[in-house]
Structure formats: C-alpha cells, structure tokens
Length: 512
Ligand code: HEM
Image 1 (tube, protein in one colour):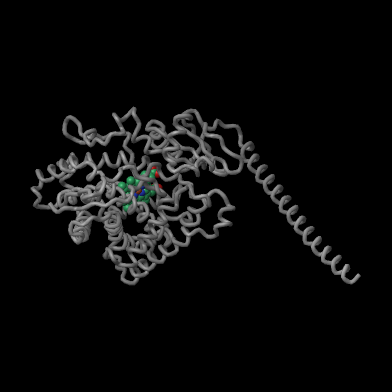
Image 2 (cartoon, helix red, strand yellow):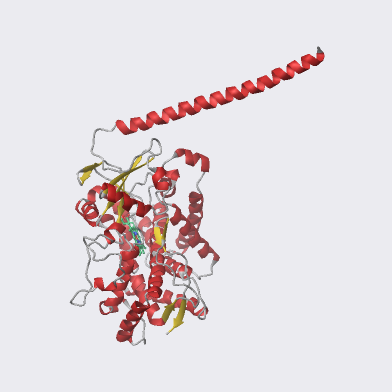
C-alpha cells in the first residue's frame, strides 16, 4: 500500500507536471493566437481605415511584415528597386511593417519631386526609431520645418565663414595632402589599401573646420572616433529592422548603434568644453567658437542649443567624411583600371604646371579633362545610390498617385545617372561625355550625386574642392598602379549602409 501510495503519488506528481505543461502550452497557444489576431486586426485596420487614395503600385505586401521578405532577402537593394521599376514604373510603393515607403526612379520623376514640388518633399522621417533615438530631433540632417531652415542657414553661413570657397580652406586641404603624401611615401613603393589614409585625411579637414585642429593619423582617440563614425554610418540605414518592428527592439535590446553614439558624444563634448575655457568672442577660431558666440549673443533669434551643436558636428562628420573619402577611394580605383585616362589627366596637369607647383582651385577651368574624369566617377559610381530618406511634408500627387503626408520617400539617384533618355551608353565609363565642343564642361541635368532641391547636400562645394585638389595633386605626384602579380581590382562595389563602397583593393604609388 505504502509502495503503491508512493507509486500513486509519483503518478499524480508526473501527471501534475504533464497537466502543467499542457496548460502552459495551451496558454502559449492562446497568447500567440490572441497576439497574432490582434496584430492582424491592427494591420487590417491600418490598411483599410485610410480614406480612399490612389496608391502607387508595388510588389505584394505580406500581412504584418509588409515587403520585408522581398527586401531583406536582397543583397543589392538598389538593383532590386530597379527590377521592380521595370514592372511597376517610376513610382513604386513598398511597405515595411506598417510604414509605407515610396521609391522614385528616373530623372523626370525625381526632378518633378525635388525641384518642381520641392516644398512637398522637404522633410526627413526623423520619427523612425533609430534616428529618433540618436538624433532626438536636433542638428541639421534630421530636423524639419522652420527649425531645420534656421539650423541649415546657421551651418551654411558658418561653413562659409570658416573657409568653404576661401583660400584658407584650400591651404588646409593642401596641408593635409602633404600629411597623406608622407604616409604614402613611407610605403616605399609597397602595396597598400588607400582607404584608411583617405578616411583620416578627409576627417581631418572637417576637424580643422569644426574643432580648429587636426589629429595625427595614429592618435588613438582620433582613430577610435573615425571607427565609430564609420560604424554609425554603416548602421543607420533605414533598412535596420529595429526601425519598423518593436519586437526586434525588445529582443536586441539597446542597439549597439546607440551605444556607439554615446562615445562619439563624449569626444565632441570634450572639445566643446575645451573651447569654452579659451573662448574669445573677438577671435573666432572654428565652428564650435561660432556656436559659443551664438549662445552668448542674446540678440540672436536663432535658438541653437548644445545638443544641436553637438549634432551638427556629428552631421558634418557623418555626411562629409565617409562620402568624400569613399569618392577618393573610387577615384584611385578608376585610375588604376584606366591607365590611359590616368596618363591623360597627368599630361593635362603637366601642360599647365610643369610639375613645379601644387594644383589649386584657380586651375580648375584649365583642367577640364580631370574635372570631367571626376564627374564621370561620381556619375557611374553614384556614392549614395538613393538619397537618405525624405518624408512627404504635404500631400501631393506624382504620376497620378497620391502621396500622403509623412510617407517615407527614397529618390533613386543611381537610376537618374543611368537614365538612357539623358545619357548615351550610360554603362560606359567615358569622361569625354562631359566636354562640350567649346572645350568647356557640360552641365548634365540628370547628374545629381548630391541630391537636389532645398534639401540637397550642404557640403557639395567642400566635397568638390577636396576631390579636385586631392585628385589633381595625387595624379601629379604619383603614378598609381596595380601591384605586380595582382589582378586589376573589380569596379563593381557593394552598398554597405548608406554608401557604395569598392571591394577592398591594394595599390602601389610610384613617385613621378
Ligand atoms: C562626395 C561627397 C558627398 C556626397 C556624394 C554627398 C551626398 C549627399 C546626398 C545625396 C545628400 C542628400 C540630399 C538629399 O536628400 O537630396 C546629402 C546631404 C547632406 N550632406 Fe552631403 N555629400 C558629400 C559630402 C558632404 C560634405 C563634405 C558635407 C559637409 C561637410 C556634407 C554634408 C551634408 C549634409 C549636412 C546633408 C543634409 C542636408 C539637409 O538635410 O539639409 N556632405 N549629401
């Protein structure tokens, strides 16, 4: 009896466990059923509660996840957009979760939106999760409305005052060129990957504008900051699933992008503090001093706070370093892929300078072929294949479709650069397409590497100045070659985060 009672007890005990398990499973199933029914109803409500509008066409959108399965499975999102363009036309609708995203392709449609209807597309979707977490509606890149206008004006004026378009900045670029050459010379003809040298040099130009100082290329704090900025740049793409699916945020916790940002904040805040200690309103040294002056100047109606200042600094770094350094990286890749073109550029410089002096901006009208070569690199590579996301600021129609306020929009710049209505044989790398019969540079309207309209790139003059001065003086000083025994590196490239990057390659620089 005793034994049986023990057995009985254990049977009941086991039975209890099984019943618990069954109960748990049933509860889980019920919870899942309830959860998915709720999400399904929410999705249906979102889909059908909108008043009737004519949406652009697009691929089939799955319940809850929208087009995430099609988009997430693609290695090259920008090519995928082009494939959908063949099927659906220039204005294509996607859904990421419950967020509607429109991709606009081809010069004509892009121009209509950015220029003719620019006021309807002036915003950026700063409410998307990662952007909101990092940028907190401050700085110039991710703010909207009057605040963005004020901050953009402040930033442009300050950039101009601290050298863009002025000789002093040109001198700073030439100084940095010398530092880069020291590193290249130290390679003594051995193969190296120019990416990091360019990244450091370009970041230093922004450092001189913002902080009034440059850093040594082996300064650990500087290197760490560049690493973090690159990481941030690669990971703030709109595609990050955290942006659209709260559940991913719950699973992944605080994104490493956000943690990374905290470290960048420390770097910039330390410099703001140092500037505060030595600030003299009568002798403004750099961007940070300008900000300190605005804060001090009570009559100034612009409200720039420290968070804005910090964010604008990061905006300039983020928007200005990777893009320009990557353009230089591509430039050298094209030089080694097209030695004849490299030689033609070199001959043009020699004819002008005889190699006895540095090339400056004033030489630009006389160096038309190099100018054409640089434009052709920016066209064919298209460093940012789409603009960073914009948002519809007021409802409008495009190609007969209605775009509601706050819809996210990407402009497919790359499609304009290959639009056969505007370019002859667009797949061909051909600098000559830029030179008119009068020997002057042709302004091609479908060339838009810096976006367009009121929200276009603020660093375009600076970027063009850097690219021209660096490229001309590199070509004048070195012959770039594929290292012996290596295959000529591919010019295919991959989009990582925001920019189109070459696959890593090595080069040798033979002094002329
Ligand atoms: C080759 C180099 C560069 C390329 C290809 C490039 C490209 C772009 C593009 C495509 C946009 C988006 C425009 C739009 O939405 O229509 C943009 C925005 C921006 N860029 Fe650049 N950029 C470059 C260099 C720079 C530099 C050097 C700076 C500053 C130092 C800079 C600062 C900015 C800022 C602040 C914005 C945001 C403007 C706004 O939203 O009002 N960029 N850039």
